[in-house]
Length: 325
View 1 (cartoon, rainbow, N blue to C red):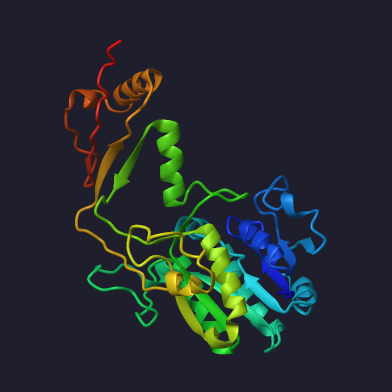
View 2 (cartoon, rainbow, N blue to C red):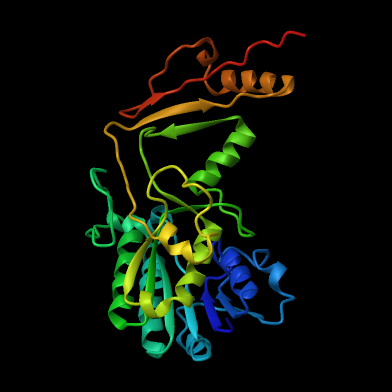
């Protein structure tokens, strides 16, 4: 695979992993990113010595810049976005221009022969009851500005031809440009640093996909574009728990594992539960006891507590047994 690939927003959580996979597959990779989180970002430092890797600092809304970059690409993977509902709500104008207007510009500048791979979010399906699986034919009913801009951008691309769109489940896993706000990553980090995690809506089910599986799926989409273009694909597991083995590392079977219907189950009342981890050392047990009393006085003695307002919280702390020396 010797495609010339332009990756927008390539310094992000997904892009810094994807670029590595593209280079390993023999692609010539050019990244454009505006370094919005600072010039000290290290997400692509490890790729700078690769002779087939180039980096351009710039904005995907800059027409003169994008015109120059787009014309040299065989494949365009458009990752640049303001990601997440809260980030979009903080600056709606920025979210609209980056998430939607940059796609309009890209569509206007590219030729029909240039393949576009576009990641969307499965939040475009909106709030569902969980009674049915969400398939690619399920209606899109986004409830946030983030979801609306991504859904409209996806539709514009699909209407233009030579496009594959991937509706991603919640992504997790290590990346050179790490994100700790993603659910699984947040749980792992918090469990390690705090010794426990707080779970809201403990019966809620959502789908997950590893960041490297997403990168592999994009390579698969490039290799199989003739039979995939013009359609959206759900990318994630078909249940809330992992399948046997890691999807995305099964050779040509990657999309049969990854591109399955997504299910989003929502329970009734919002609840939270504190899941206590069991320390394995005396120091860990003492630290756990101290944290339990600091976080919620009396909880270590098994007392219950109702959360503030209308949000009902159930906090369960399993106090470590005293060590017998």
